[in-house]
Image 1: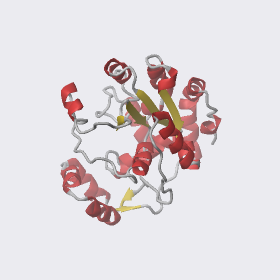
Image 2: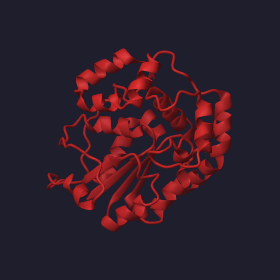
Image 3: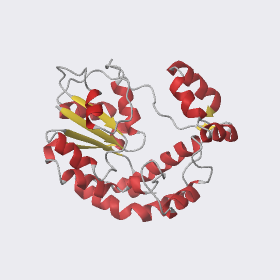
Image 4: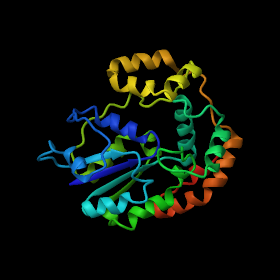
Length: 266
């Protein structure tokens, strides 16, 4: 069986980190445009209970659901949704950390909303990525109900053990004892904004990231970034976003048959 997993801002990192606690085959991934190149990524996957991938873009894509079904109508789809308001703020912190924006939260969002040319990789899509209803329906229109699993980031945060067991049960794979003490994908801000902006603009940061071993990356992050005094979303900003997302949250709640009223709380 093959499964695809699509995530909402930072949830992927959390789940991926938990599963890496159990050794997995190490493969070098590359951006692929042709089906035969994609299939080569799974050349060494033989006699496995489940073969799958994690993607950051499949939920938002307007073509992914049908393309996945055309390739494998028996594929299982796992989606983990995060409160769109906390998702967008996390997205902003990441964009600010990586020097893709230097503006305050609301200005960055409103500027992105005004862009005429928008899309994956050419704009931030701050608001659009959190409009889940149409994205989920695209998969529900194509795949049978028993092949789609919708999970919530809230559940991962509050009871990760149960969520991961549910995840494994749905995929019919063995669960193992996960370690939950460590925090993953913790938000951080650059200590040296101008320097980080410069090396990002000229492409040095991306190249260094590819070349650095993991141990050196961790050390570099401690030097270049801080987790102290991180900005927090304000009541005014929450109200602005609730007004934007309220209707879509209500539609999403009906589609996945989950109570999402907590997402609308200030």
